[in-house]
Amino acid sequence: MRLILFGPPGVGKGTQAKLLSVRFNIPQISTGDLLREAVAAGTELGKKAKAIMDAGQLVSDEIMIGIIRDVLRSEKCRNGFILDGFPRTVHQAKALSDLLADLHISIDSVINMEINEHEVVQRLGKRLTCRNCGRIYNLDIDKLADPTKCPKCGGELYQREDDKPETVRKRLTVYAESTTPVKDYYQHAGLLRNVNGVGSIDQVNKDIVASLNHR
Ligand code: AMP
Image (cartoon, rainbow, N blue to C red):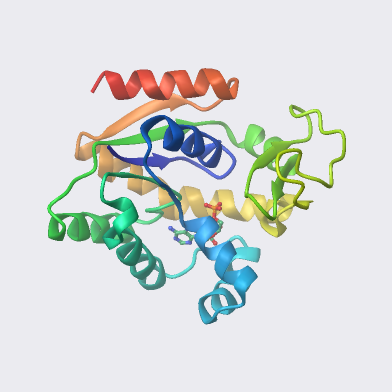
């Protein structure tokens, strides 16, 4: 199974990608996580990407396509993958199509998770991420005994720099301008499945699985 999870920041792509990854036993490929790992490791890529990410802008297509090319060619993606956060521009989507054609594989479905802007700003303002295991928590939904510590692994919980309200608004503008056209690209290809991203994690997950069964 080869899937793309598509939708604005804060819709729950990461959360759902993790669940689908366990269910179908295929890796979650989050370009945001890969970049944050590069930032934490202080690599050349991380140094270039940090300021761009903190400003809520997109890292260049050239860099992102290079990253995805390496990952999709790796052994771990042999039996499938879930792309989370890629492609984010039509140029990236076209480059992905070329890359997949070279590898003689194709995308099965693009899940378009829908949510309104107000809900996004609300959610991201309450989002905490574990620096160690990457799990995501919501201050309203997850009753955390200690909001500084991950209940699963004990790692430090932090608010992403780009989850601050001004940056979230910038990310939404970038999404509307650069990323929304990607939806039409996959609509034309007949791959798009729309799913309501507002609801419990479990409900959204059921809706995604149902949409995959109705291919
Ligand atoms: P995410 O964790 O998916 O919200 O990504 C966090 C940030 O990483 C984004 O706001 C961008 O700055 C950068 N990023 C992640 N994926 C991409 C991509 N496909 N193209 C460009 N920038 C990306």
